[in-house]
Image 1 (cartoon, helix red, strand yellow):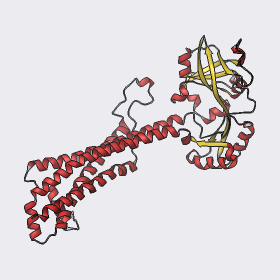
Image 2 (cartoon, rainbow, N blue to C red):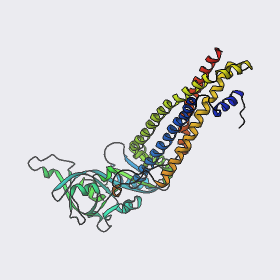
Image 3 (cartoon, rainbow, N blue to C red):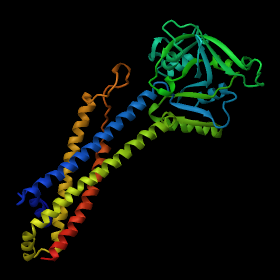
Length: 411
């Protein structure tokens, strides 16, 4: 290997030369190993967080619309059917569907619980989502009986004790107008009795916990709506370019609506994963910084060991600056060696886990979404992992340079 400068060439020789004290060699190895382990850990952890982010995306894709439109003011769109027709004509919109989503009370066989009632248009909802494939019992309600049947989530089925052959379920919602009759409180509620077509599991906790899906006519009758809707759900012709379609919808609707694409709907969850990822990165970078102290101690011992060589080099005409740069390069070599080894090890471990899933998650596999730690290697993370190695390497190199110059000044 040809190295341009004299200090760099001497440092390269020092790196591979046998040390007179075995302790210096041992600490040098420990320094490289420490940096390598910390770098490998950074790559592995970042890859795991990438995997969890992909799992989050996959699960939200099952039922979440490409774009969700909600009122900017108030709870409902007054004429949602007309607005749906307007949105349906916008370039990039494939399907636009009104939805009524609100809270209700469900009663089944003397058991009751608060639920989130999701009124949708069955045919369009089936085309927009993967609802047909999510049923663990029964099926999505048929078109012939859609206005008198509902689908319940696994959380509702479990809490209400709904079995394989369920009876009808009662739904209650408070009347929007009028006073509460304290003598007969039930007069203040609207009630509907519907059949149960099946039980679904979406793999999203907020939906599986307490959701009931029904035809929009059931929800409108229960909540005393006519043409109103609380949201408009949209499927686009270009799922990979949601931002452009969302922008066109915003321009068309103006300030009357809030338009969110699929990622903005889950913004809090994505932000949480991102924060956890980068906080962990900072913690591991701190561990890497601690590991770099071994590099400083190694170089200090090497400087003391090479004092006689330094005297010879000074006598031959090398300046103190060149002496300092020799150990500056030595620090860079050690840091780079540890960083490169760590990248190779971390990349190898991550790819093995990504393709073979060797490290398993604890728990019952029959009820788990995944059984092994998810890993997705992103090449940008390799650069991110190597960045603190080089920053810390430059810092330790500067310290080594200053110490070597101070020792050379005393010779």
